[in-house]
Image (cartoon, rainbow, N blue to C red; front, side, top):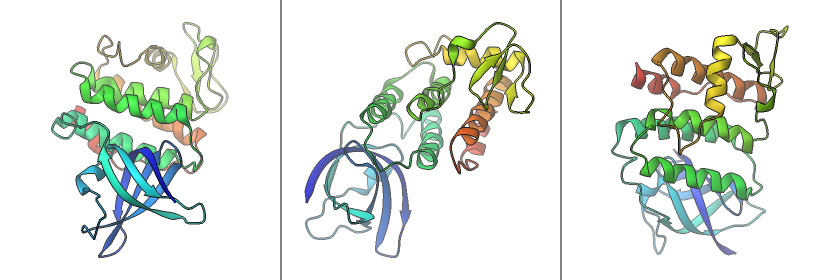
Length: 241
């Protein structure tokens, strides 16, 4: 059955000499794997330039619940990405975030709120001129809200510690090792107050930014099953060194 849906490209990988598998988070079907010919065949219209990470697309697809891998009939951009592919910082941030989404979002059930968050976030990055160095921090910390593991912000008190296992701020260090010290907790609380509209106002030192990204990834590993090391993290780190 043919259906139309918007989607966000997460990852593309070769399947064999003739086909690739493209993983897309779709508006109506959740995460889906699509088999796509590596060369255009017949009436199938799938421009391969649209398979870049976090491309935002509109698709006509053949979707059968009995199949693990679906097929795309037609595909076009919802809106063109012009600054992201050419801006060195934006480009690496997109590679990093696409890998995280590929590893973190596995559900085959649609989630309209998550899709809109991703859709609008990519638009923000495309249009942003200021605060780009903070974009991935805002994206990651607010993404956990849609993944169901957002921290309890109301528990913050100055001088406290952030307990990463339980997602709360405490007055004393937890008995386990997965917590932020007083200085890191202040930085983390500042991060929780950030959004795309005000991200240019917040300044972090190189050390603060590097440390907090490591801690956010640790938080993901603690709360998301089988969340692995992110390979593109090293590339991101080199960008800000």
